[in-house]
Amino acid sequence: MTAPTAVQDVTDQPLVHAPAPVAQGTAGDSASTEAIRRLSRNLAGGGALKKQKRLMELLKAAVAAMRTRDFDAGAHRALEALRIDETSGLAWHVLAICQEKVGRFVEAIQAYEAALALLPEDPAIAHDLSRLAQRLGHLEIAEKLLQKFLAAEPGHVDGTNNLACVLREQNRYDEAIDLLRGMIQIEPGSALLWNTLGTVLSDQGRMAESLPFFEEALRLEPDMAKARYNRANARQPLGDLAGALEDFDAGLKGAEPGYETAMMRMARAMTLMGVGRIPEGFQEYEVRLDPDMPDAMHVVTASPRRTGEPLAGRSVLIVGEQGLADEMVFGGCVGDVIEAAGPDGDVHVAVEPRLVSLFQRSFPSAKVIGHRTVRINGRLHRIIPDLDDRAEDARPIDFWTPMATLLAEFRPTVESFPDRAGYLTSDPARVARWKAELETLGPGLKVGLHWKSLILTGSRGRYFSSFDRWRPVLETPGAVMVNLQCGDVSADLALAEAAGVSIWTPPFDLKDDLEDLAAMSCALDLVIGPGIAGTNIASAVGANVWMLTAPDDWHLLNTDRYPFYPRTRLFRRAFDGWPACIDEVRAALDEVVAKRGNAA
Image (tube, rainbow, N blue to C red; front, side):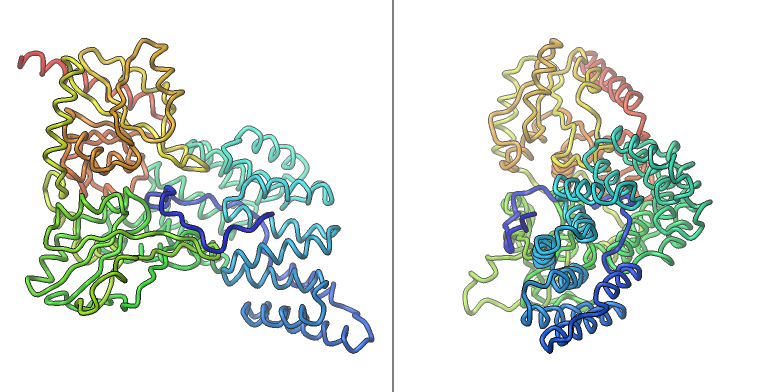
């Protein structure tokens, strides 16, 4: 396996909007009690030579540090051992585990690879490396490593289970189910296998069908934290919010330290927001910045982070988070900060570079700059180059704050959300240009369409419908369809064309020309789509938007509207209810077209 580049610019790569809960099914821990026992057994004996004796002493000290979860000390001892003998596969394995546990993923991968090269017959190394590869999203590599492991250890429950998880995350659901069913026939008492089978169903949006599998896992193993967590994520969209929170609380008590605990806390925070327990939910949402979260954002700045200091007269930096859609959602508090800072304050706003001009026009008294995202040793770092380019006598920044952290302060209740048609201002000249362009398409209601995310792996796929299901909307008489979907959608557009539906694509880059996308959204009569970057931009600039929302969308805050964009019309659906939802959208479109015709 080739380690990811130590420093990698990922600014242009899509980041996940408001991380969805990740199914917990992967088994095993490279630093579990059993794994450490195995390492200890491998260390038994040793050699009589002084050099070999010192090597064994260091590795035993490293394993002892691992038992107390002092992985930094363990890594230090393993490195000392490797200075004595760099061909010790065991030392490389110990180092790999310790580096993984402290989040130095690039170094961990390199150490695992060295261990595997030196000890190719040790299946545990391939298994440990497969779990790390899966966590980092290298699913094809994880699959190959697991196949290698299972070739040496056929019928291994954890290995088979983990291979099913990798297949699930590649949306190869039928293969995952077949693999799990075959193993359950051999090991019907394995709670782990029943739990993972449930996650394969829940990832597809089949929540009600998944519940019996989680319940069987809990019958077999009542304290199984993974099953509690997964059942909570199934109960929440089914409307059992109290049950979901009960499961989250119970699951957290037995969760593995680090990644598993952080993911459970994140899911619990989103559920708290979903049931309307704010600002408690907003405060718990701070876990998104926990280093144990896979894509936690580390902001690189010399200024201290704000911890509640008054804003009046101060110089503050607001840093956007996660993906484009999130900067739209959380950016609604920028105006509040400017007002609180007052005329003597100085507000800087760091957003995705493609949004700088849009935010600057909307907040002329602020200084809007772009940020960049780089992955360093597997961790996301957000840097703000323009801060370094300011004049030497520029006013120093007193403190910085993550954009989403402002919610707990400025939106403590549902009633505190402003009733407004957007908070950003699109370019009037561009709006006029695109209105004129749309007129050339002939008469009819001009409808812009989004239909999917650029990221559809794992559970994210359940939030988006296949394009063919949109056909009733596409065929609405009296409507002219406009493609606003970024990415390669040539196959979808060809499918529509073959069905006799013409969809016009505007002549600009739908991914990068966000000023034009915002202006086009305002020029159109209507924009329709799920809650992705495009529909969030349209809502933020006050366009007429119909948004299709999932049953577990926390942004609704237990209301019947979208408080962040109160003028946006919602169409709520069950995960398996796409046809009914699309039919509802079509009926609403027919009604608008009819009213338009009567008005004419």
